[in-house]
Length: 366
Image (cartoon, rainbow, N blue to C red; front, side, top):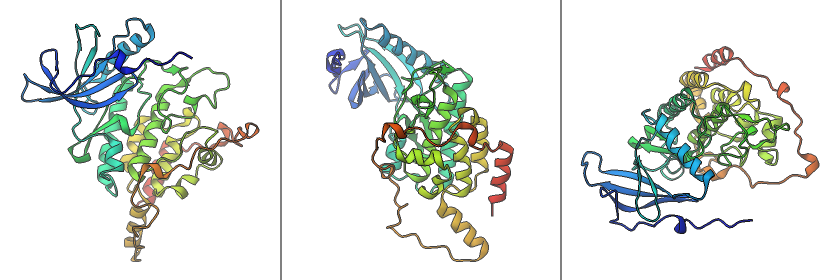
């Protein structure tokens, strides 16, 4: 197997004070990936927008595939960048040194990503209105992308930047985005967030998976992150024991996560195994607007108030407090080869209509 060339051999590592395009002064490195380095840089010419994130991409002169991926990322991000809840791509620069580095000048998210906001800052803990407000922004951003024929394929908490103390969120990183309505790039995305069909477990004919429902699935996992601070499973794969339990009984979600009954109804449709029965983005937007409670504590408290009964106290030792993403799932376990087929099929899973779901949500309100 060929060895991956170290990033340091593909890209220059800029020290603080280095100038990009004689205008952007590097402050520090704020991130690195397999084929990119991200810097915080100060714009010396525009005092109104002093700071940007600059993503440095290697030349890839001798790698046609990687060069194509770079062009795709830049082109697709540029296509959707006008939306208020997508990180702006301001401009693209090409260095004239021996590295021929491509620089994407991006809007800077000074408050970090959604993962940090959830796990370290706890911005969304028991913040029902903020969760609704932020998640509706994400839906709107993904709707914008899909209308323009762009499918993100790597929606996750780490790829969402936070502004205004959590009230504003913006989608970033279009490195895996595609215009393909049906894709055969199995395993494209991040383990916790991609759909079961994206991994190919349910596609024995290898005809490809629908990219729009794949994005909807990822949004469902992000919604669970926001509300509970957890991931429901390590991977939506037949090899994951927690996910296999969900396949056998989708109602297990409400027993293993601190979610309300209305949210449970929504999640079962967002995380429908059959992508054709999965909620559309329009339906998800409507359902979130109609969902009165997201957590079980909110629901119990409201119903206790309605009935005049005292609500149970919340102990600091309660398993649902404080939320941390790593709590669930259990360690990934690999099952025997002869035990990989779950006892279900698409046709055995009921698909509640959107109208029925909205009626159910209305009936659940106190």
